[in-house]
Image (cartoon, rainbow, N blue to C red; front, side, top):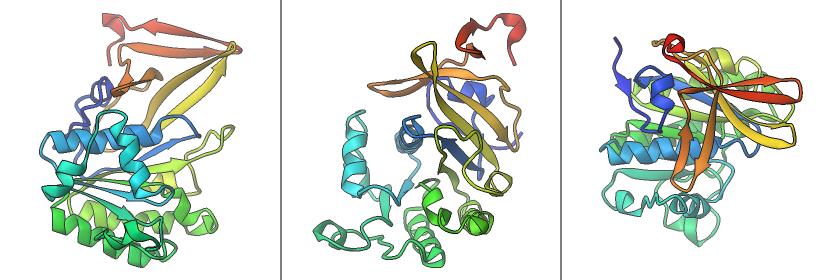
Length: 257
């Protein structure tokens, strides 16, 4: 059995039958408000609790805002920054502003994927990082969709080659049922799809592991909630969606994967 990386997210490792195989590059895909960023930040935070350094690459939000958002769940990364266990790679501010002047890892032009990859490589090596998040990779190819697969492969080569297990956040529209770009799903080792559906006048959150190389996994759609401590996945429940309605089924012994 391949070495596993525990996400530490309640219920998530259970549906992955023990965790994510080490070095896997996992696409965390979904529409706005589905919880992709929270899932990814929780993955990094739990790694820090287990003594595993990590980096968080931001392309769509100010680094200060990312840290503030994490604090709302009780995830204060500042002590880990001081210990040299956590760093944000800033590919958002373009190096502009007082905050950026104090940062160690800044990418002035995120469209220069080669430079971005070099900065990410340096951060991983400096920290001996074992986990990484890029939020979101969609920004890198949204204006050049034909290059999506090549860009993901560049990133994957560096991350996997350095022994890092990573989440790549992938944006899709509310109505889109794909994974965020042509060819992207083939380059990734794993795909986790998060959904927020209006069913019978109520919004329901669910996720499904579409694929995960190196391990068996649940093939069912599981409900989850965003609590004040992060995401909780109900691995013992299955969400069955019908036209205009849904049913949450408690899994019995005979239904265990």
